[in-house]
Image (tube, rainbow, N blue to C red; front, side, top):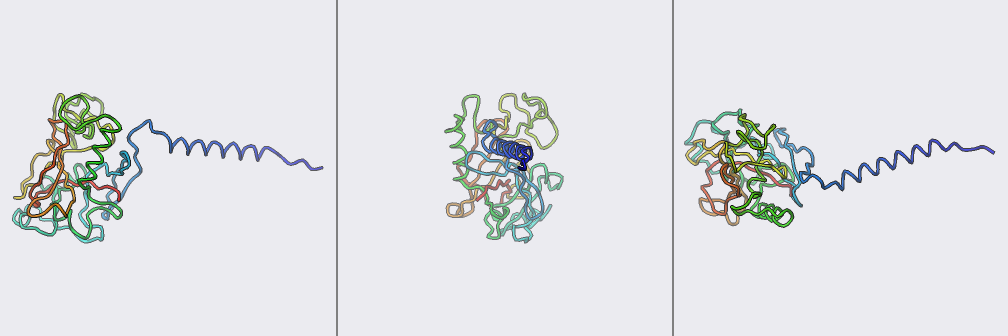
Amino acid sequence: MKIQPVLPYFYFSLILSILTLTFSSCEDDDSDPNHHSGPLSDIDGNVYTTVVIGDQLWMAENLRTTRYKDGSDIDYYGTDTLMWQNNTTGAYAWQRNDEMFKDLYGGLYNWHAVNNSLGLCPEGWRVSTPDDWRILLRYLLDEHGISNDSSGDKRAGNVLKSCRQVDSPMGGDCDTSVHPRWNFHDTQYGTDDFGFAALPGGIRTASGVSRWIGLYGYWWMHDPINDTGFDAQYRYINFDQNRVYGHGKNNKNIGYSVRCVKN
């Protein structure tokens, strides 16, 4: 009687068991709240880090595309402030009109670009909405006890900020004067607990002037039903405060940063 060898089957079973355990471990490991889901590319070929926070998948960087998702160019006026002021179809700018800030803080888009029907975010993604931000803040409170009021040690603004700051108490790579980073503050510094990595790209005013890089991060929210007239909704985080602000509206020709969320 011919005896069948058992070693090949043994090794096959062993390898299968190891692979099963490995994939199971990767799927079930919740020890790190920053669940990075892999890179995302836009129409220009820019690659973004993304992060899962609760049930949401966010870009972990500011948008920096120069084209809508169908390949159409977004208007760019450089130092021509008059054209920027009069734009009603969508435009972008770089902080201080210098493209070196593109990869550091992303673009500054007016609301007309956010609302353009051609689509500002990559396919399958959208500009974050008021509901997206509410869900994010509710998750921080309900699952981690992090509120968005102005008292206490752990507050929503600071845990969402990038830890990159001038003289950051976090030390290491967080302590830096190199852009991108927040300006110095001794108590209100970013800890980036969830990988959101909010950075202070500042704004381009409705008159076309660059301001507040290192001090404030502003993000448009997309709500065309409620964003009527000359103003639209936004959120912002200050270098010297620990909250996420913004329930008001502002001029649609201001240039703010944009964060995209997966549909």
